[in-house]
Structure formats: C-alpha cells, structure tokens
Amino acid sequence: MTKLCGFLLLLGVIFGSAYAAGAHVGPVTVSNPAPANGQPMKMGAPRPVGPLSPLAGIVTRETGP
Image 1 (tube, rainbow, N blue to C red):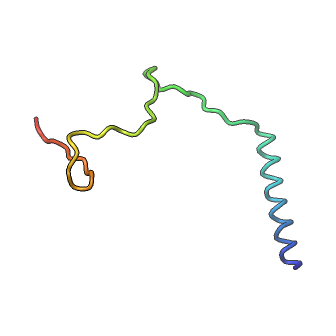
Image 2: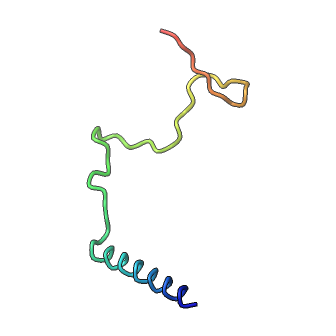
Image 3: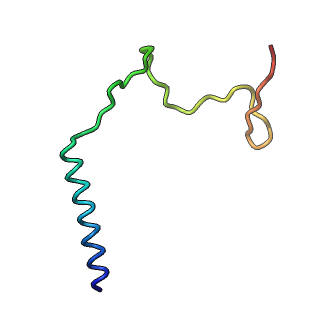
C-alpha cells in the first residue's frame, strides 16, 4: 500500500511541476501560420490520380510523356 501511495505522490509531483512549467511559459503559438506563397494550406486527403483499379480500390497511375 505504501508503494502505491508513493507512486501516486510521485506522479502528482511530476504532473504538478509540468503544469507549473507550462503555466510559466504560457501558450505556444506558430510564428508563421500561412505558407510563404500566401495561398491557403490544403489539409484534406490527396485526390487519387488516374482511374480506380477494380482490384480492391487500388489507384493506378497512367504513365506517359
């Protein structure tokens, strides 16, 4: 029982010190939220290139000049 209490006390000290350090530093922000070219970032999934393969939905890419 004392080992469990000691572990919980240590865990509380670690989380308490991490919280205090985070409160001291303050919120972290991104210094440059936009891309350098001024265009909005595209955060969605990439669109498949080429027709869909009939085998398990694999995307095939056409090779050409």
